[in-house]
Length: 523
Image (cartoon, rainbow, N blue to C red; front, top):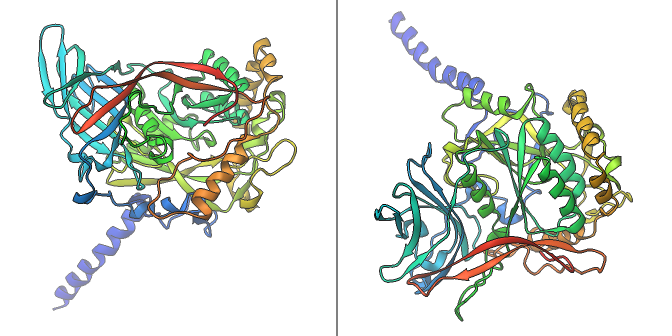
């Protein structure tokens, strides 16, 4: 009998011991983005997770369910826009002779768009041809008519021609070879900039990323012209790759076509993230999906590559790692010569909350991406070993708070202090680069204070934070941008094309992307 009781007690102890060991070894593994109660050792234990950094329509991100269209709302004919198409002779995750496409598709085409049977006809110069039906992945959250979709399939070797086919009509579509090399092992896919003027954040981020071993891939819809000129110089120096992010147009729209910009979620930012992922899928070791105001400083490692490698060594079955954000008080400097990176990033005035974070991944483990995460990853891992410094609302150089109506409460959090001497080489690199005659000339034209930033922020606040509408489509369309004669932008542009009418989807696309300098600045 005594032996029996010992066995019962022993078995009763096993589950708690397993739980304790699991908590110690895997403190941050979560399902459906539930935050772990374990706090980073350098963060106060009373820290809270903030949803204020997100519009209300995103406030319940962990509870998101894929929306399905009722049968009675399905449309007979719809439109779709082909954002980009890439061909991979060899891919670790997609296989040989693979195709990856990013599309903006109308959710009302059928009940569940991931089940749509798109037909691609691929052929080569050896007269080989096949019809492929790609796998479709959806990356969207809100109730917008247009949703970001990624299509992947395998085709013929040495593909030279790719067409969409509806059983009767064909449309030849342009494609690019996916990148096979990247300027750095880690690539930062940066969300599209529009009416952008925060050149100070760009400079700080470019030098920080370069020093810690990353290359920035920056999408641009529109930049203040002097900011664009500065970014071009940084591209020449290898700090950044500038890419086009277009306001979409249907060259030959039908009378009942749904306008794509108004009815796409947050300017189709998810499309840019997915495009960047497909571009660097075989070229980068790791990808970080960040905004311009998100900066990561490695902790315990000298570069990003080693820090991320360490995460995957400890958790090899995890697809994506999410770092939460911590908002840091920051001041814009009026001139490029005034920027001090140690001063900007090395102090400890933080908001005592964690903001919803951003994703880092091994691109071979992921085929599609949304804004803050991928909806096609079943388990997300929130890393507690580091955090993203969020320079969300810089105070202008005239000491004016551009977002006074939504003020953040900062505390001096000494436990967040890190060894700022690691930023000294970053500052030295900045001083070396800006010493050039070309950059010094551009610097005389850079804006000393912001103009569009607080206008756009106020519009977003009114539309998404203060008066959210249920089942609305969140985006920046409709925001008023008062024009000034002394503030002009460089815009991304292209030659827009429409395919022939097809059933049930007519496709639109573009060719010949280019930059245009225009009077005024448009989103």
